[in-house]
Length: 132
Image (cartoon, rainbow, N blue to C red):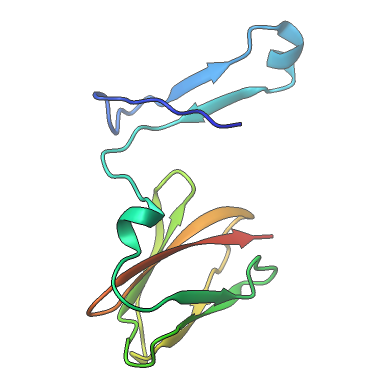
């Protein structure tokens, strides 16, 4: 399902929005969605710019770790951040070895869709991670 709308107020409101089907059998089955409206949007077209590309392997991730690799060896990963599918920052780490390759530890991250944001001195990359 895709739900597209524009909200101009109430970003970060403490009470999330909710919509659901009013058919009783659907309500009993939990067919409803809750979501928050945030000020900043993460979009692949907005954020992946500059030179080079990023690959993630394995993806989908079945364990607690994956590897990222930048196609340009001159680019060095300085930081990476993991966001939930709703845009909430769940993890953020400074890279240890400042190289074009890094091992990403997902730890106790629950299964689902996440966004990985990788920073270099010249670029910012964004890609999806699926945790099984």
